[in-house]
Amino acid sequence: MMEHFPSLLRRTALALIMATGPAIAEPQHGIAMYGDPALPPDFASLPHVNADAPKGGRIVFGDEGGFDSLNPYVVRGRAPGWLRTMTVESLLGRNYDEPFTLYGVLAESVETDEARSFVEFTLRDDARFSDGSPVTPEDVLFSVELLGTAGNPIYHAAWRKIETAEQTGPRSVRFTFNTEDRELPLILGLRPILKKAQWEGEDFANTTNEAPIGSGPYVLDRFERGRFIVLRKNPDWWGADLPFYRGQHNFDEIRVDYFADAGVMFEAFKAGEIDTYRETNAARWATAYDFPALRNGEVVKSEIPHERPSGITGLVMNTRRPVFEDWRVREAFIQAFNFEFINTTLNGNPEPRITSYFSNSPLGMGDGPAEGAVASLLVPYADHLLPGALEGYALPVARDATNRSGIRAATQLLQEAGWTANGGTLRNAAGEPFTFEILLQQGSSEAQSIVSIFTEALQRLGITPRVTTVDSAQYVERTNALDFDMTWFARSMSLSPGNEQIAYWGSETADLPGTRNLIGVKSPAVDAMIEALLTSETQEDLTTAAQALDRALTSGRYVIPIWFSDIGRIAHRKELRYPEVTPLYGDWLGFQPEVWWRQQ
Image 1 (cartoon, helix red, strand yellow):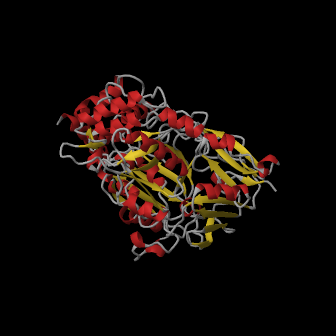
Image 2 (cartoon, one colour):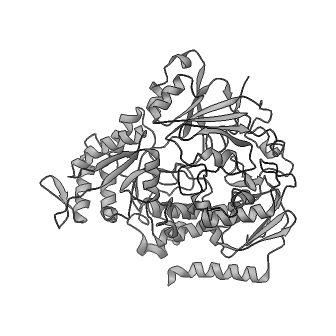
Image 3 (cartoon, helix red, strand yellow):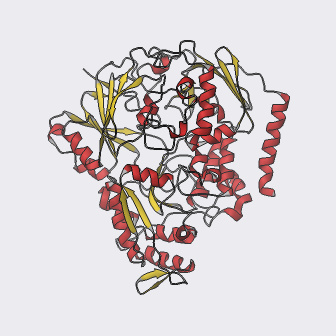
């Protein structure tokens, strides 16, 4: 009962606040997760843009795989993410030079109280969809409910926390909450706003052939399913003169060509068929960019620094599968993974390792035992934590290419978990062999190289996994259905983690079709640390909760992590430019193509 007491206190406090009415609040031009927005109400542009960037021209991207849907807001099918980011807007927009601060876009103001028990948005009078119709309170209320009930599960958690949703004026809507969650006003501010008339009466969850009508800078111009998509700048875009958008969305046309794999896409870039290529491999960046267009200056290489957390990237083990239920098996796989050898082999100059989910930032867990406020958060859940969460946990370091110490440690752990080698094959007490499948997507050359080396190490333990490579559509279908044992996994982290953590690791999302909780985490400790994040009132509280969550996740041994880079690497045509000021998040969301331009 003790572990539920803090949650009960918070719910009781929230009920008292709501019963006595919200504190006096006033409409503001923006809202920050903590403190006040950095920019004043009369700001002229965001700090990381070139406010006078030239307009016009086009940019051509390459992408792997393909698409079989035009609705990016549902589980069914695979839709181009560009439709979500370029054609549809939200009430508020993010400034990527602040950890988490939003400013008015469709909404001219946002209002909330000290407890953030509600949020009210007032729409701009001139906000318009691409067909010229006004964005109305009815559209806002409809969108939030539609996404929260029929959209992708990532939208559902926030919807369940809304007590009432109502129109409060000709251009205003108010959402009142039933749960203490200080991030909710910002989360709703970022909800995509769809046109009610387009979707009313439609089976939204199964609609894949219709692109949303949005209010954003671009509209869908033409496409060939699975091959290319072209977005055209809306000449009548309502937001063209908004200070928030000054210096952004500078191209007249965005084209995305789809390729079977990264190798083919890179050759297309070298041949001038696409304009920009994001390189994720340090060795290739150093050695593979010696081709005529680069030598003669038609192509340039840009390195963009950032200050964001490493996130988690690597091979994820599906804990719903019996072979990966036991943490000792998962630790054995981590021990057998020779990171140092793989890193040097594939990257040449080794990249830094991802040591935890929030490493490379103040939100990452510290070395050694948990102390102070972090320990206070974790100790009540000690029975639900795995070894290392409180005592301290660190990834193993291989001393040589053979990784003898790691293989010995893995063998011992597997024996403790009931698996022993018999005739060169690892078996349990019933004589059943240890078998599992590694699911990969076609074109994932780096992941395939890593898996090739790793499977050799597993064979030394008596394990020979099946490696299955499928096309992008099959991969999405299987991962949405949670039909995998091990697969490639990547989750980016921000400097202001919040509700997305429920989607990533929350127990309530673990078994939903299309869940982002691919791991299958169901941990009262993890849930409690996420709750502590969502109820943090200061940056210090947030940091403490994030460090505690980091310990609970990392010691869970769910992912075999690889490396990260503290710079972004983008090769591009010389005519493509970006601002000299690099935002806090670097080459993250909102960077390319949003703040880029073509120098004529």
